Length: 294
Image (tube, rainbow, N blue to C red; front, side, top):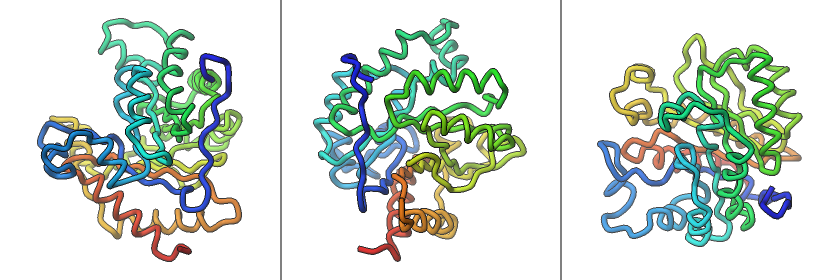
């Protein structure tokens, strides 16, 4: 809901626009896994403009997890990208990772309605231009399914009900109580994010299926050896999927797109080191496209 009280509807994708594939983030300028000179030619003035013009039709915004995006910045993103480009914006960590936010800010305090209003203000420039494809609520593995956490999740979903919502849950307790989790999300017209990552005993178990009218997939890589023991954050996501690993997902996505009522589908690759996400996203576009009507 915008500051004027209007409900902001997402852009409705039809035909080929029902499927959007991209990467989690577009700017990785430093570190061993940087994209400069690998994805972007040296001297590229606007990486977002290059990404949106030459690579993909959607991107997942990571920066919004760490800090609130100024509305002026969101307006610039909207102007920089083509009319049909869509953003998926990750929710602020204060809503989903309160302990991480407390450590970063030095303040242990619950999220307030003012915080929600400020976050929504950062989304509205994209939503008003029909460029907000989804809001991603990513929760940590420590977020277990309990009556208390289910209530807090429901409250947050209610506060953000004006937007198309995608919820990423990582602990197995949520899939163990699959019917309860599905009911909670469906009550708020939110979809359950399907994630591919290394599987441990505590990891969530899922099928590729839409909830509500949206399918949302995230590929984090399968670097199990470095998942918990990485020295640098990019090491966890340093993984290149093979075509054989992506083929089963491509077949399921293709099948869903050919049903009588296909969902809107977003697919994002988070294995960003050295531009591997770009390579795998392009691979997925080809694999899904093979066999689809032109």
